[in-house]
Image 1: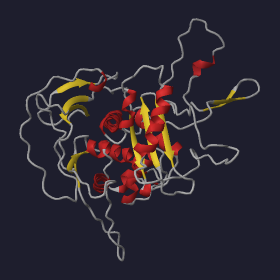
Image 2 (image 1 turned 120 degrees about the vertical axis):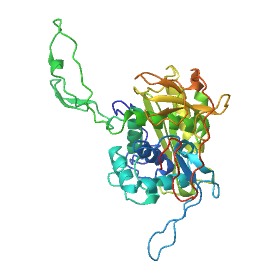
Image 3 (image 1 turned 90 degrees about the vertical axis):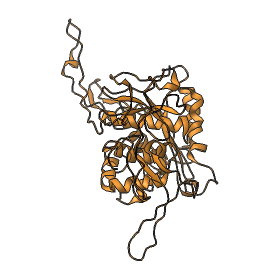
Length: 390
């Protein structure tokens, strides 16, 4: 899909139309699993969290009501828990326990609202299990939602048709609804070229969009979708796997292309232990992108004006000390930078290349001052790396 217009460039909904007319890309309603998590974390970042906010990755059990047993979600690697970790870590390693805590702290109603904005669900049930992708949706809707993450938060709608003309060549319907009164001129007589105003609805802050894109690049560089690293270009995305490996998802994107894949039986059944989105679906997207983007240059994601690029420790999210070999470049909104940080760059509406793609990292700053440890307790999100309680 073209993330800037919503135009579907290619779609495959099955092996053979002769065997089955059911289009699994547009009609099959499946659980997206962890591929829904970027919308949870986008909601958080759009409402005050940062990629360095700390959330506990640890056991949690929740009451479901009278007569019902407690619900105790687990990470994919049952029994694993990393303790207090950054929001970035939660996305890169697809941590269920962190996601449930984050969703509980924000409240499911606001998550349901953002899911509606992105077109993934019309009316998401406000239950915490929905934060882990338990609600059913279609691949088309998911790819359309990711397109809005990729394009800076502009609302787009998926379409297979650009326009419809009558027998006389007059356009009677167009997917592009922008007005252009100067486009009706029959010939050029020296007038200025028509200008189209981008009046698409902005559903999230462009800075939020860039921040979650940078985090999702980490999924490919050091998370659950490292099979795409071999493409050696800026790619962001997220894997998804449902219970018993019945569905495997991966949706990945570059600045100008979004590709989504889900793999599963028509009648959901286990595909085998370890058959995750990163194992099954991600290689399909990798092979598709390798061919599709072979003759196109690697283009960095476009940074919005005013975004702050800061060198932080990958694990803690705090300003990186001199010589820190785990340092990464993290994006922050103005005023949300970690204390003691050195601003190494600022978005100007152009491209900001990550260090992995040839750009030199910003100058190293002085060691950060000692910071207090997070308060005790493992059933809430904890103190953010940027101050404030989340």
